[in-house]
Amino acid sequence: MDIHNLKTVACYNSRLLLRSWMFRLFLLLLFLIVILYQVLAQTNIFYGVNSGLVTLSSYLPHENAYLFTILQIVPLIFLAGSFLGKERKMDSMDTVYYRPESNADYVVGMMLGFTKTFMTMAGISLVIGMLLHIFASESPFNFWLYPFYWFTMIFPALVFALGFSFFIHTWVRHRGLSILILLVVFGVFLFQLGKVREGLFDPFGLSLPNAFSEVTGHPGMPLYLMQRVCWLFVGMGFAGLAVLMFQRLPNRPVNRKRVMIVAVGCLVLGVLFGGVVYMARENVKNIRELYAETYNKYQKFPKGNVVSNTLEVEQKGNVLSGKSTLLVKNQGDQELSEIILYLNPALVVSAIKEGETGVAFERENQVIRVARKLLPGEEVELTVEYSGGIDERVCYLDVDFDKLFQLQPIPGHSSTAGKRFAFVGDDFTVLTPECLWYPVARPSVNPASPYDVLPDFTSYSLQVSSTDGRTVIAPGKRETKEGRVCFTGDIPLPGMGLCIGNFEKYDLVVDSTLYELYLFAGHGKLLRGFEEIRDSIPAIIRDARYNVEEQMGITYPYSQLTLVETPVSFSGFARPNKGGSEMAQPGMLFLPERGIGMWNDYKAEVAFRK
Image 1: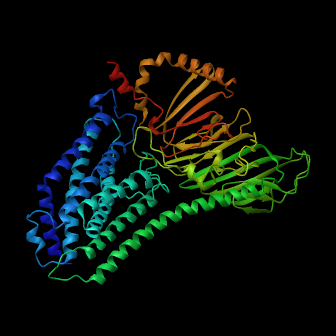
Image 2: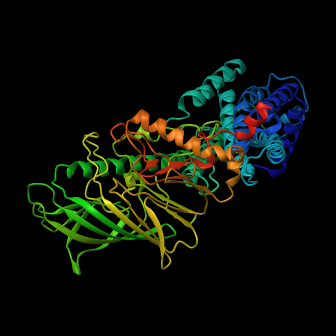
Image 3: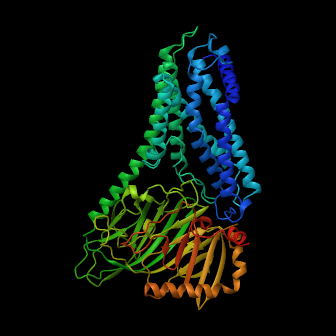
């Protein structure tokens, strides 16, 4: 291909596209829809709708890119046929059409012209959205999200839509039939295949987990980028096939073999990137099945009970180091030939000791077989030392894979947040009993018989060191000793949760119960609306607690209730056999980031009342 010819074709095509009444009409409608929607639904111009306070920084840029990506499809379908078809009226493109450039120069140049024009329009749309974001919304602002969505969401979708449209128009060679085929195919992608395999077959990237947390960022950047590159190469491959099928006699015949190699190469690369995404998903599924089989294998083995568990934990980066001192008791009526413990597969056990004596053990995935017999009624104190990461694939093994990872939009958003079940990092750490971050004697799930699970109530104490000034949150009475944060439970608990991060703390004592709220640093403005009802808050809490206890027929058993803000992608799963979700821990509730889907936009409500 000749660079000069490419520039010439792209320049003429871009100019002609801007003169097209069809393009101008589509562009006007597109901008009206995008801007009106954002003004009416996402800005504080109309306070009674949305002030932007209870939203993410990715809310406005993603919605702008989302709408532009969808709305650009229709004009692309019609304009591609109009500009490629020879039946169009005489225009300035004829000065190029009859020049001695190859078909590759002509088709690729036209594609570059379309891409330049539409990407420029997308950039203008995003700039308008950015101005609305800055001056008409209280949503947190992150400049880099705008070029991110422009390049990773709109660009691959545009290249695929163009390449596939060119291919269909040059293959079918009937404008009306080509448009009908494209409308049907793109409609199937949009409404049927988009959410299949967690968005793998979504060339426009609309259903992919794509919301950014202010704390932990994107929920799965590597797989997201590979999926976008997959459809980018597929679009380029279809454009190459369009060159081969383009019915025009060039003065410079193109090397069809070379074009075929490039086209097929792009398609193969697209399939390979898509295959990596698919295999990553299948690997998660296979590993989960392996862990489930391990649970089932040891389900009928007699087990002990953990009477007490003293945990000493240190977190640095993505590594969690722990020392657990367990008092294990055989409460059954038969001798235990060995002690079965469960621990996250990514945590490597360095030693198990009884007193100062090492005890032999074997490891099979999440199961630890300790070579220590235990007579009925006998107790033994074991110390387990371990370190490593957290494998989230061991969580929720009693839930169907497709159901567990089903894509669900964030309330009030078009984007999805992905699903994470644990975090370990310097920015934020959250661990629940579901991820087996400390050794237990009773499995948290029974994949073969989900309702056949008995909780093991244990007296926990926890010591966390080297927090670097971050706040540590866990159930129990909190004390600070020699640089360590210690928690001691008042009563035996079915499990222990842990959260470490940079938080702002708000607390209140009502009827001898301590109520704590931990928000991410800088999120305190979410509580401004409570200033008006400050004196009424104790009565509101008292009435709410009474109503809940009355409905459930039980009394709240803990001396405190702690509410903790967590990243938007942190997920739990409500299971009837568990009686709740991992988002609710003993004495502790996890809230979604910025209260999305749970908290009211008080500024919008106040403005609406006025």
